[in-house]
Image (cartoon, rainbow, N blue to C red):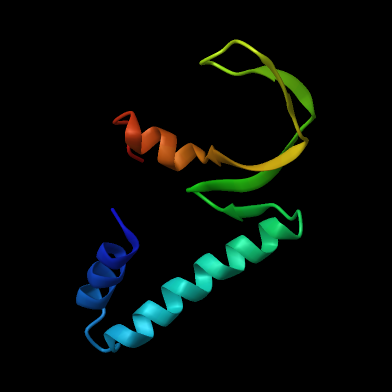
Length: 95
């Protein structure tokens, strides 16, 4: 599912809202998640999962084409851990 499909589904399920308002709501939610993660905060959506940021230390990697050693800088990467409800539904254990 892509963002526009999510907006379309939510607009259809909520006919009392204009599609432009649904789009604004979805974009605001995503922006708030991004902003929180940029600050280093953890974002938890109960039943769905938790977004956090993990730090990867600097290391020496390898160029897969040539095999040469390459210095890889320290970086921060997004991490998502699924919630119990999501895992259960994916495994057919709906509650």
